[in-house]
Image 1 (cartoon, rainbow, N blue to C red):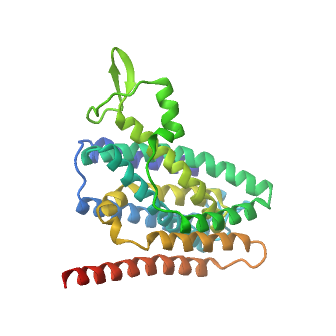
Image 2: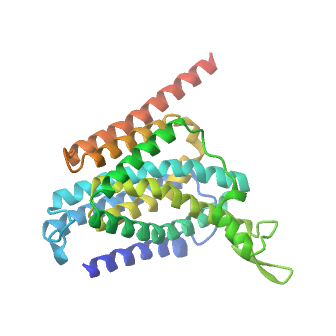
Image 3: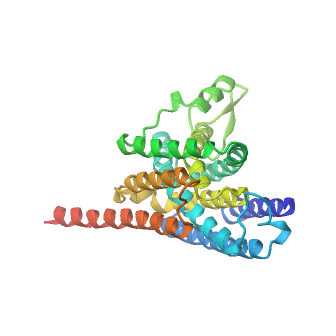
Length: 323
C-alpha cells in the first residue's frame, strides 16, 4: 500500500515538473484554446487513472480493497472516484471566481498567472493531504463526526445562497499579515519573481502576496470541499487522489473560464444544491444511504441544469440587447 501511495505522489510530481519545467518553462499568456487543450488533457489523465483504480481494487493489488474503510470492489472504487472527482471539480469552480478577483485586484499580467497557479496548486496538494489525513482519522475514530460534516455542508450551502459575490481584502488575510510581519513588500512587480531585495534586505514581491492569497483561499475552500468528498467515500486513497486530480485541472479551467465567468450566472446556485445534496447524503449515510449511482446522476443533473440555464438566459439577454 505504501508503494502505491509513493507511486501516485511521484506521478503527480513528475507531471508538475514536466508542466512547469518543460512544457510551460517560458512565461506566456495562456490562450483559451491552449487552456481547453490542457483541461482536456487533465480530464483524460483523471479518467485513465479512474480505470487504473478499477483494476487495482478489482484485483486487490497491494492489498487495496481488503482493509477496513476501503472500497471492496473495482466497480465501487471507480464509481466513487469519479463521483468524488466531479464533486471536487465542481466545487473548485467557485474558487475560479476568487482567483480572477485576486489577479484583477493586483493587476497581475496574464503571462505570470500560470506561475502563481502552479505553485499555488503544489502547496494545495500538501495542505489538502494534511486536512484529508486529519479528517479520515476523525471519522474513523468518531462515527458522529460524519453528522457534523453533513450539517456543516448544509450550513455552507445556505450561507452561499444568501451571500454576495466574494470581494478581495488582502489587508485582512491572515497569511498576508504574517508575511508582511517578517518581510518588507516591494512596491512593484518584478517579472515572475516572488522574492527580491529592498534597500539591501530580502523582500517579497506583490506576486508572492498574490500566491499567499491564492493558497489561503484554497484552504478556505478545502474546508467546504473535503467534507463533501467524505460523503462519497471514506477510503483515504480515493479521497486524496480524486481531490488532487480535481485541483490539478483547476489552473487550465481558470484560463478557460476566466473570461466568460459572467455567462454562468447560475453556477453558484448549482453549487448550493450540490453542497446541500452532499450534506443530506452524509447525514443519511448510516441510516438510508443513497446509492452512489444515484448520487452521481443527481450531481451531474444539477451541474448540467445550471450550465444550460445559464447559457439559455445569456442567449436570451443577448437577443433582447440586439433588438
